[in-house]
Length: 214
Image 1 (cartoon, rainbow, N blue to C red):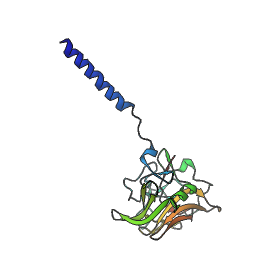
Image 2: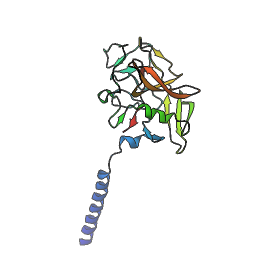
Image 3: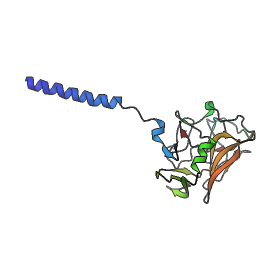
Image 4: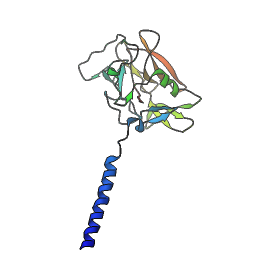
């Protein structure tokens, strides 16, 4: 009987130790859930509604005007907002950078800077290829040294004057959080079937956002 009780006691200690080991394991940080390309940690999918990622890399997610928090649908001919009831604003948002209070990325992530976007199109370290993934056109960016890659859908965007959808499936246009030298433009990423690079866009355009880890 004593031997049986000792065995049960030791078994209970071992089980407690296993459970404690599981409980003490830290949860993965957002950066650990991303992909490192040329020294920058990129999210695997676009921003959806503020504070969330789209479920799959092929999803367009939601569109945002620069330095604004309203999420606009990325499909449909006419601009439809979420939350409902918002009206389209064609004026250029203000600011020198995308303010943290307006950043739609989940906690631990942020809208990339222009410098971070530049690392993604550095042809000496990152290869670019136009491709189709699960039936969706987009760009694949691959770290030459590590082989890590991310897919960005060619989501197009919404025009500044009336929010009409354009270039969906034909071009990728993504915001950075950095303004250009004007008061109405900001830097972004652009890619098409033959090239990828940085561009600057009128701030009232509504474009996709791919976050980077902090």
